[in-house]
Length: 106
Image (cartoon, rainbow, N blue to C red; front, side, top):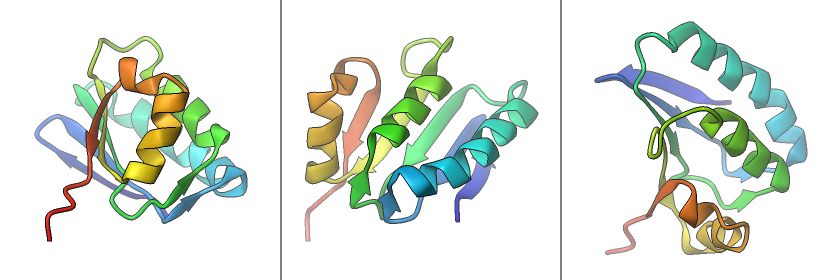
């Protein structure tokens, strides 16, 4: 369900299209376990939301848990659609994390 790759001291997580509460409950343990395993070799955690169309408050909580105790910009959220970005902005996460919008140039 979650794809993970390690490249240049970055641990990149790619997620399915809907991150509702049930899905986040399934993947949270996997994400946190992988972070624990790779903590010595990883400087930056990247959440790639290229395929994500919906996020729940549970995913926002996961972002906080991953970002807790990290330096600024150690959690980077990329390829965020405008709709999902609105959720991050309403929660004030655009001021906490580096969030990059999906490139919509066709």
